[in-house]
Structures are given as C-alpha cells and as structure tokens.
Image (cartoon, rainbow, N blue to C red; front, side, top):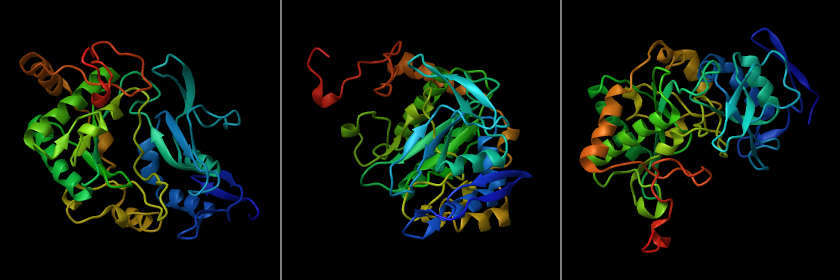
Length: 336
C-alpha cells in the first residue's frame, strides 16, 4: 500500500498511512488523491466545518468496502483538534470533533473519512442551531431538474420573508439549501420551520412537492425532508466526497447556476479547479444571521387555521410531545 507520507496541512504535518490504497476503483483514485483533493479545497471545507460537532463517515477500504459512521471522537484524537459535548435524543452524550483547520480534515481522511456530517450548531452553543437546512430529496420518478424547479420556488418564498438561502448539490440527485440563522431557537423550533417551508412549497407546487414522511405516500414528487433538522440529524457538508463510483462531491452553487449544471459536473478531479477559479462561492454565508420569527408565525397559522400540527419523527427517536401516532398508513389499524 506504499510507505506513509507526511502532508503539509496549513503548516501542520499530518501523517497519511497507506497512501496508495485505492478508494475509487472505477477512477483509480487513491487515498492520497482524496487527501490532495481536500487540501485543494481547504478554504471551503474548513469554512463548512469550522467549530461544528462533526460525524465522520468512514470507508477504510474505499467505497467498495464496509463503511460506518463515527460520532464519538476516537481515543487517539490529537490534542489540537477541539471537541464538543453533545446530547443525542436517547439521552446519551458524546464528545464529537469540531474541525477548525484543514489539518483536522486531513487527520480524518487518514482514518478513511470521505463524507463529513456537521451538526447545524457551533461548539460554543450545541443546543441552538445557527442554520436552517432544507433538504430537497428527489423520489423515484423525479430527478435533479425537478429539485431545481422546487429550489427556485423556495428561493422566492424565502425572499418574501426576508430570508436568503445558499444552495448546493447533495452529491447525488438532490439539492440542499442552507439559511444562516440567529442561534436562539431550539432544534424543535427549527424543525417546525422546516415543516412550514415544506408545507408552503406543497401549496405552491401541488403534485410536485411532498412532506409525507412515509415513502408509500410520497409518489413522484420532491420530498422536503424536514427531519434532517431534528437533533442528531445531519447533512453532508459542502465539499464532502460522496461514496459513489465516480467520486462526486457536494458542490456549493450560485443560484444562477442551477439551470446550467448537473451533479456529475462536480467531483474530486473537477472541484479543485472550480475553487481555484471562483473561490468558495459560499464564503459570505457566515456574514449573515436571519430571524425565524416570520416562519414561526406561519407555523402558528398553519396549526391554528388549517389544523396542521406536528409530523412524525424518525423511528429511532423517543415519542415526542405533540407528535402524531408513528404508524405507517398501510399498517394502521382503525383504532390508530
């Protein structure tokens, strides 16, 4: 697998073992190629992860091997990588790494990490998200262009509320839109806003958008995955590598690019040149902090005037206050 090498990561030496190990057989990309990719996009990936508790999605044998999510910081964590103490819905807690420099990213890459899953919080306040994340997930029969159409309507709706979103590809067929917010609402309140966004998009694009939690009810529509805003649910960061044979990455975009691009345009080989030319196109996102007051007012109106209350949580969650019965419709008994 080759002799270990040392890489200069922002002035800090990071050891990379087995640099010749092939991670993406279809394209012949090695562990060293992945590490060099992250070095090349260091400006962007560091901005996306800075001070955020981050779960590592690890592929020690490459994308064709077994993988796992690592939430707890390993025992051999270097002292220069900070952590944050976080609580899961189960009540358990853990210390997660909070990258603050590109060297921390490279250290994780050495463990086989390809995809970084940061929480929407900073380590200084792990209970109040500073991002509202909207996940537009194409269902069977729909694709990226359908998600783009929904994103356009989402942009218009956000603008009406005085909000601004920053779009990126998921690395697959979907789109993510991040809205930086003031860190003063709970996960429950932020999730309620995501539900409200989804319901408004359903009204504006009937037959094209759904918030239905149960797959059997979604149909050929774009699913607004509101539960991605629940505690301990994360979205792959911008610039993360996704575990698909062609080594795609989650690409930050300008709004005016959506109509011209395809997800396959952005991968480990093409993204460094894009960043070298344009820089991190989301670099200004942290300069903004928006209020959720208008969305929460709409949520109140939906509940008061339309009888729209909470929606189901993920199956591994404890029963939440105000949550409807968590029963798949096709399996529900008349008494459910």
